[in-house]
Image 1 (cartoon, rainbow, N blue to C red):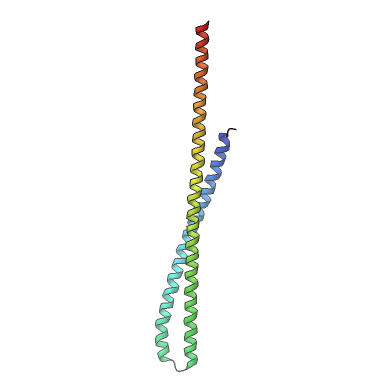
Image 2 (image 1 turned 90 degrees about the vertical axis):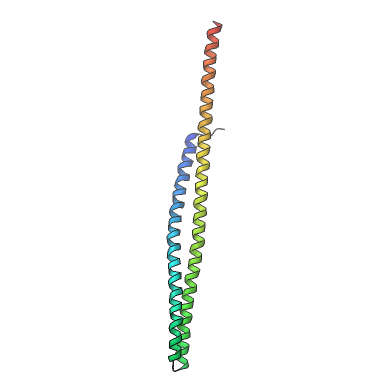
Length: 145
């Protein structure tokens, strides 16, 4: 069973489209990763500011209720920083997957391209052999006559 070059070309186009889609997904993952990194840094900075501000507010507080309020605010800032860090980690994992998918799609495209090149080379060799046989047959007939 021989593989048609048209089939391989169609597979190459499909793999090329899949590679392009993976490249777009990787670019989007880079953007999301950068945004998540910026959000995590901003949340960490806000937490640091809240901790510094909490020290002075605790020193100035006059009641236990205000201390609880400060603790609740710090807990909320700490939770926001942790959520931002989790989001950043998830974006980093998604970026790794997107990079791996792009690498895999590019490798698959190269494999199909090599198969097409091999097929075309084999066809050219076969055509050359057929032409040589035809020439040899014609030359043999001339000698026999």
